[in-house]
Length: 296
Image (tube, rainbow, N blue to C red):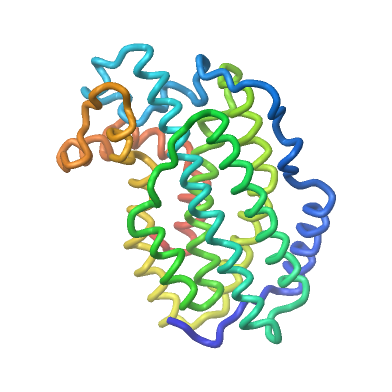
């Protein structure tokens, strides 16, 4: 699927990207001031909506104590932040590689925003790692299969395809984090961290959408069908991965009711009615956009 296709946009969309760069230059996450780093994180307060715990609504949740639920909330948040760390530290080399290899064919406005995008992802990664260390949270392993997609597969593919699939990964993680972390009862530093991150990520998502939409307007039917087939394989796995990660059983202080090798139990959590409803709520805008391009 690697072709001469590079990153292009219509003149109207180029104007929008210029405005994204201007907005980023004026107001972006500052690692030093985004959080009051001198203050403690209150781990007696949940960092997410407790109704969104991964095994809520399944029989596996029935024996959980309130302390168990609080511990799970922090561990699930550690997984969410880990996803951002693994994703966001791969994007700068990917996007800067596009500039290095295709600079003669990429408009200056797009090159500038690719650099802005990369800079912001580095700041996000540093900030998330500092938060994890301050909160004493474990770094989860890279998402199985999807990390290889980011580090090996996408760099060898046409740049718009790389932007599309990083968009899908980033959009899932971002919508999930914001959906669960912005309630009034959520631990304040966690809520502030995700809200500040969203301020930048909303621009990244807009950029990815414009690149993908332009690509689908101009690429050949054969090429688009290959991309759609690839997405139909990857997108359901991405949703499952976000919905429940079996690695959590390795981090709990108590015996977790779903063991990492219990495929039947894991499948039951993924397909629970509670998680189906939750995914329909938090990913509704993403599902609608994906469906317009025939990606699932």
